[in-house]
Length: 150
Image 1 (cartoon, rainbow, N blue to C red):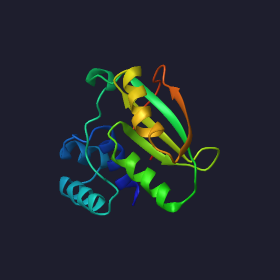
Image 2: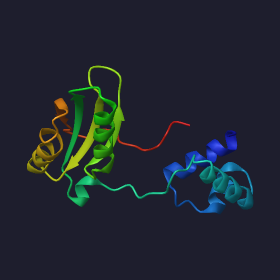
Image 3: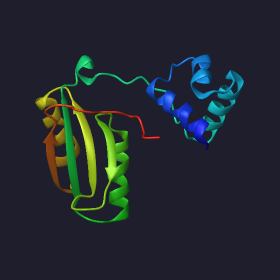
Image 4: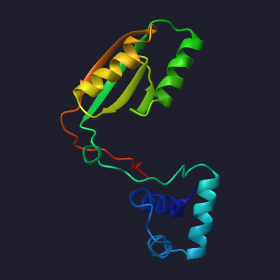
């Protein structure tokens, strides 16, 4: 990946709908080169997908919770089962396996506090392998981006 690819990616992650001719102007290469590079970046998995970024409140999701989770046991099958469950749940928008006091960090979206409480009963309390979870409710979002520093 060269500096032109980085410029192209920087433009695309700001707005994936930027026209090819605008990308060519911004990067100083031809439109055909832009198209070839974008195809190569997609084929290599650098560009994973093009998505719309939604405003959670506009779609009825008023609660964002940051949850740290400790599992009861360190058995691989139980860890894998928890990972599968978290990856599959639509309310879990980000899921990280971490080193430190907890085993995992989850970002969970819910309509309201009652919706988050229902999630905790279904997701944590019903799982005998969850030893402890701690929740921080987001009061205000000061920055949220999917843009990577290139």
